[in-house]
Image (cartoon, rainbow, N blue to C red):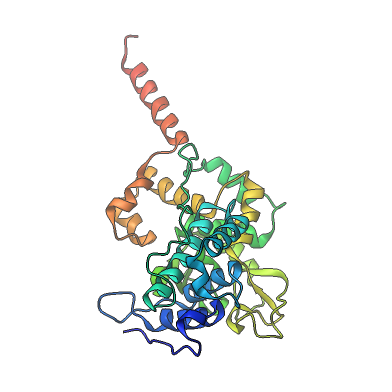
Length: 324
């Protein structure tokens, strides 16, 4: 069972700051599986608590979220900060705030009938936005030296390893096995995961981490401002003070370079292209670490590029077999 943190204030006077600290303890100590032996990763705990702090002032009483003004304040702050963010980012922040509200209601800090997130619906991916990108476009993107080495290494890894963006951004140099083209990272649910990649990403990655023995693989260009105050965890800093590259910044760079692609598009494309090349589905699933066939099937949709090749090949076969 999770640990219940004693709050100094009465429930009616508990502030957001106090509730967030209790929420953090709850996340760290409450199992997330039936067996009771798995807990939220440090990355998840940090992401959830940070999201709350970005839209709610620490001194605000939690009980105010049950009022019209308090709920409006939360919804407005959410929309201002993440209303136009990427679908994955917006939905992740929404999930974090819903989790916080649920915790506060369960702890008796907030009216159980309150719904301060009403109207903040999950964002969807536009149906017209194809996930499988053309091979020629991906090849050109990775070969373009006008983009930084850091970016091209990340993009190549996303395409070749089939790993989630968060898993790649959590990579540390000391956990890389460059010779075997593999690495250990924090996977979905906080479990350790092993990812592998091909020669294209291997060349870029070796250049990117040359001379470094530890710390985050993907770093910001400048030193982290929170280093001296301890706001940035030591594990997210390199020896020179630069901090781990954030998902939002990585996404921004890829969108600017590609005209709107996401890191998930590269992962999706890598999986789809492997299936188009005839790699058996169980083999691709083993590499992508998908366990559910139903969720994996969406990757089996052929790209327009592949569909056109198949049509042209069928036409040529028909012409060869027709009357001479």
